[in-house]
Amino acid sequence: MGRAAASALLNAGVPFRVLVRDPAKLTVTDPRVEVVTGDLGDPQSVLRALEGIERALVVMGNHPDQAELERRFATSAQEAGVAHLVKISSMEASAEASAVLPRNHYETEQHIVATGVDWTFLRPNFYMQNMLMYAESIKSTGSFALPLAAAVTAMVDTQDVGDVAAAVLSGDGHAGQIYELTGPDLMTFHEVARRLGGVVDQSVCYREQTPEEFRATLERFISSRWQLDAVCELFAEIAAGSLAYRTEAVSDLLGRPPTTIESFAQRFSAVFGRDHG
Image (cartoon, rainbow, N blue to C red; front, side):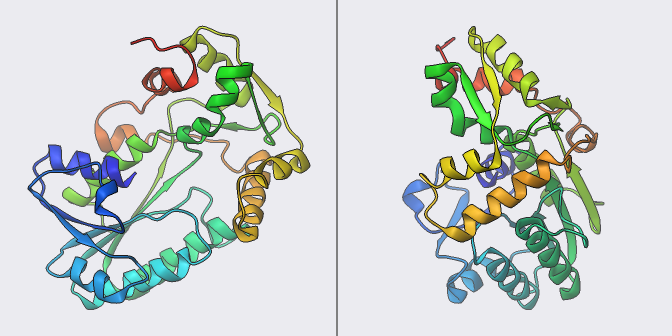
């Protein structure tokens, strides 16, 4: 999402600065892009990145220290004179959230509100890019498994979320707004499988996995107990219907329809199946 936002800002001719841990991994390269090397855990690098900045985007992957680091960044931004903060949050964030990830997002949102700066919260739902984790299984076995039973969600492309972030950062009238971001279609994952298969020209099957099977699979790839528990807890809420609605926010903010699952699959067709060129 950060890369997508940066690309959109660059294409729009909006000057910006990025804070990155490793400049060698920065894929958006242009003389107009100012790069600060550092980390959210390094206060001095954060202050360097914030100097003279009017608006800032807060986007960070799930991590045990995510809430603390994002709130520290928000406080530093307020002290540095940043006028507007845009945060990538979660559609499940609310005062009633019980799962740790959406609860942390909501409490960080409240911290940002308390700083007194203008704010906009972007709350996406289930990312289409999550399906890339199952690309090898789809390619080799024509199937994927998730513990989501017959739950429905209008999954969203992270490219769309990044484009919305850029539009909010560079536009006016967004202060104090919460935008829930979804894709265009409510689908079960059986429908996701069918539509993915239609793009890659193979039959794709979604297998309804038990929570125990899902956790055992994740344990092979996730060493952090905190992250393992947080992901399993979040997927249990999705299975219970927490994301079973869609919005028009992406269309309203971008003036175009959100990305369909077919367009997403076509973009990654070489990953999911045979390359369509």
